[in-house]
Amino acid sequence: MMKDRGILIVVSGFSGSGKGTIMKELVKRYPDNYALSVSATTRNPREGEVDGREYFFRTKEEFEKMIAKDELIEYAKYVENYYGTPKEYVEKHLAEGKDVILEIEIQGALKVKKAFPDTLLLFVTPPDTKELKRRLVGRGTETMEVIESRMERAAEESQGMHQYDYLVINDRLDECVEEMHSIIRCEHRKCMRNLEFMEKIQKELKGEK
Ligand code: ADP
Ligand code: 5GP
Image (cartoon, rainbow, N blue to C red; front, side):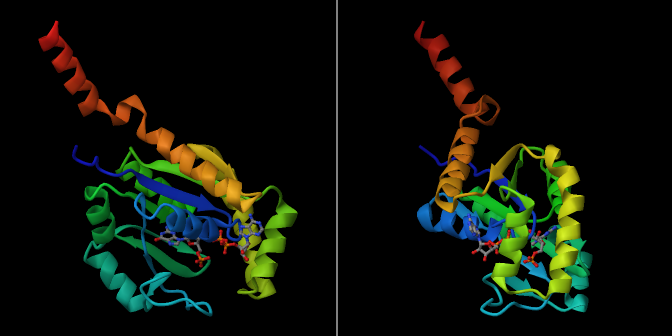
């Protein structure tokens, strides 16, 4: 049987909610199911981040060229930097039957949903605000000033959570990864995503009598 086209999945959530950690674990556990899209950004690499793995790190001029050449599915400005999703990788992996995950912020998520209404939107949140700050501080990758601006941004983003399809509460990492995988597996079984299969069975049954 030919493999179906994959589902486009957008994962958003407050900075520090644990999206990156969940995604890495999900792909590690289920490498045949998922492909993680690599975004382009103008922000500086954090310690340990590698160009082409976490992000394609680009200058503002290079990024603006990508926009002009229509090479991005969407892009947005987030706390003074550009972030965008290159088209080519997404198209290739969806066609191969993989579920492609975009880990992007809310403005980009809504643009993707508008352009591709079949997109599954997942929103990751920590159990409470105290834990969010604890994780941001614990990660140790940003100054207190940047952490404060990310907390402010989280307050804004929380106003848009209801536009997502599912809320994923990242309390215990292990359970959260399995829950996300289950949500996606169920999504594959939605009737609206299986029109061809249903049509085939209907035709066969008509012929059988
Ligand atoms: P995001 O990608 O959403 O900005 P990260 O994946 O970088 O968030 O996670 C932020 C910090 O929280 C990291 O230090 C990570 O190790 C930690 N973290 C992630 N998930 C959990 C969890 N379920 N419990 C405790 N700490 C977590
Ligand atoms: P960070 O700097 O912490 O890696 O990412 C900051 C924010 O940008 C996160 O909310 C992340 O999900 C979002 N982001 C990453 N890549 C993209 C992208 O390609 N497009 C959009 N719109 N947002 C992105």
